[in-house]
Image 1: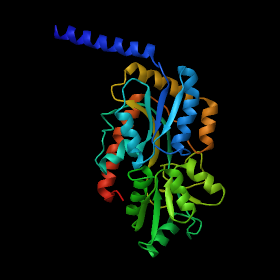
Image 2: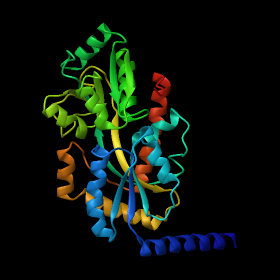
Image 3: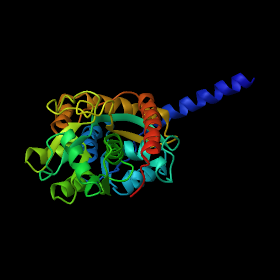
Image 4: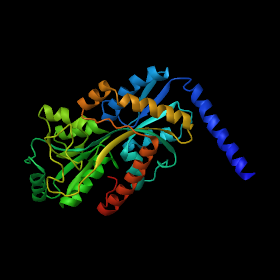
Length: 320
């Protein structure tokens, strides 16, 4: 009898999920972006949104909510109705590491339903042109000759940009002050203006400034050379063995969003990420489309949380 009751409940749950998926979406979908306009996250969100609206028959309204290293936007969606009409475009900071630096109003593992990983790319180590370093060894030597006199910009506390530099500081044995900014564009512009000496940033934000000579790119944080930036050495090649730190982004829904809706979103967005024009647009700004199942995205979030919790303990990284 217990087995029959369990089977009946499971069947009802699946049927309910499919029913929701059949009638969804019934109104415009709000896509909350945990970063400001013009950021790499915003570019991905708008690229996907433009394609998704024709597939779903509803407008995709992009809502940028920067601040508090992405945790404000992430909490906003975690509290939203789980009906598939509110989605989140977020990144690894508020999804895998911020929880180890501060008390959050949400649990990324319990309060959000991963839909799909949208992109994964290395951070680029870039310096202001006035910094007398053309490569990582020269930057380390310069920092050691000027202990406590240099600073670095990050896209916010707990972000990949922040923790990657803390890892670099520990492995290289240098003393550099952290100055957090509200998003990637202002962090990059602060380094261009000389308010900051260096930063780790995603290619989409760093490359335009490198091309016009306002920043110098000296390395990438992937284990192997990044196909879109083959001329740049990895941090490992530059003398820091096993150094790896990726910046990744994804779309999520509130927990308890019907599985049928999550599955439909995953299929549609995965297909969009494979479109040649979408890949070309993202590649043009230094982003490499990802994709995959909700389950693989969930596993990535879990493994990254474990990795960065250990890095935070080891480096003593804290909110500044």
